[in-house]
Image 1 (tube, one colour):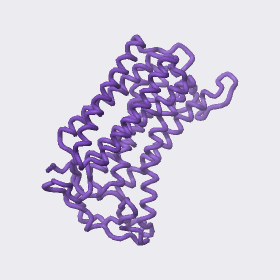
Image 2: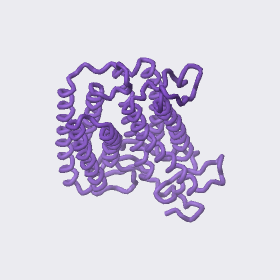
Image 3: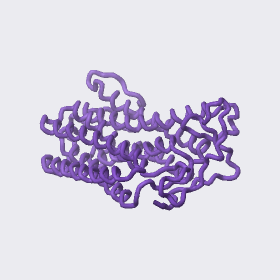
Image 4: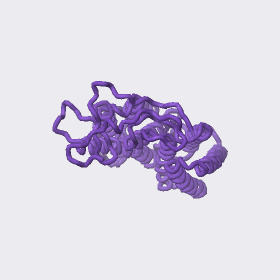
Length: 357
């Protein structure tokens, strides 16, 4: 199978040669000559994994705000109260201000990791290509956008027309962060498909439907009892039972397309990694479906809704993981490939600590 390169990783002549440590290759930093390949690899792993975990965590902390009715625990933004940045414990407000402020604080942590991902990508991972560096902007831009929308959510008293987009940005960032993590451990050659275009097209439909499932899920939430505050909060004027049924139907359609994708992947000997990620997505979708039905028939208990939010974060990551496995950046030619992009193997030097391979 021949394929066109999806991304050029031709190095700039002035870029230092990358050094390998375990599965990670990083470029030496002229500003930090004493830092070994092992040190750079550890920092890169911490930055990328920390970013992914925190991007999932913000979904859960936001869910905790909603499920504990703490959405207006702080009445303004960025201060918790006018002239008061941090919350104060009072009998009247209880823990609500702290839950809301904790969610805001995690946004700050996200910003730190997002900046770290960007710096590491541009200083030590330039050999992975311009597309990789562009994708590294997504966590920082998305986090900044989340903070801005969050301010309007508070000022507009948790209007569901803003709460839904506020949530939906997070799965997109989680998906991009997942691809960054996969790409971090992948090879440094030119990107190429490992499956036929028909499989890629089917995956694109699955990814679009997966996002639709998440959108419909936010509409279900916007009609339900967990508004985020004990007061009179505007809800979406749709029959909760009807929108829940439409949401469930979209999930079943998603499962059907995913089953077709698995058949195609099992017919292709080159898609072993994609099969693993696809089966993981099947398992995750099944668990998420069970939780969804149980919470629907038990009146949406808070704990089950919280686990359903965790499932939504993992669902977004799982879809992105499958997509990332349909492409390879290793320089070796796949069986049947007539051409492959220029590899980097000849440019990788041994790490100073002797751990390179």
